[in-house]
Length: 195
Image (tube, rainbow, N blue to C red; front, side):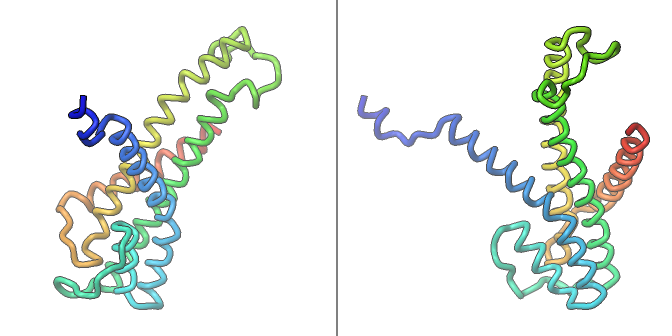
């Protein structure tokens, strides 16, 4: 009995809390991508490009950046490119956050925002309860997918800007980021056409 009392309590609750914490940090990082990307473009055009690297390092690691760098500082053109791609990814992240809110409002809370009659062809119709249940059942997995997409956007972008503060990035990060940014623009355009 004393063994169970003296053992450190490390169960699924602590692991789950750290998972939620990592997800929350990823969401905050994804929300900051667009404004920090614009600041990075400003550093490339008007300021000191080294400031951009220090800012990204502080944002990615949640600690002050060190001033010592391995290798030469990034050129203004390269910093501008990183800022532009980061701003695009940030806009994509903000759009995915909008979709999360939309899924929550139009999913589990569908009955509170839709007050009119259930039209023919409504998912789950012809009853109001069926339509509400189907909207909720479809929206919940979409929210989970969108949250993991935001975590992926944040992780990929944090790998992308590593060369700005002297860290090494893998060869596949830039092409994957360009494909992701292009895919996000195409997805946004397709969504606009549907609306």
